[in-house]
Image 1 (tube, rainbow, N blue to C red):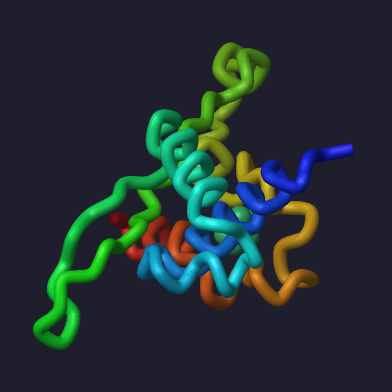
Image 2: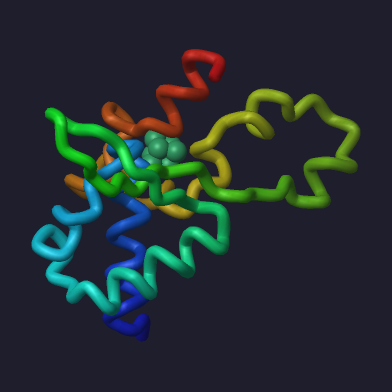
Length: 124
Ligand code: SF4
């Protein structure tokens, strides 16, 4: 069974995949997490290259934003060396997405609002 901290980390990943970014001070209430645990989660995800923290101006006030940078995925060996054309599958963010199974069924994970999928569809 996953720890409460791991569950919170998964929920934060899901939110970042969907929204692209979130103001840090809104996260504790949204995910029912204390500041110390949140900082621990953010540091871990930052080290993994999943997100970055950045100060930005919002209506004249400095806010700390948590910005999604994407997940590092690797193409399975069998596909790389199959000799077949897998270009579409190789490039689709959904193909390797850890949220694929719940995408569309979970209010936080929805392909209609997915930043990762929309960026890919727009060729970014
Ligand atoms: S649309 Fe694709 S990339 Fe986005 S959450 Fe769903 S499965 Fe993942």
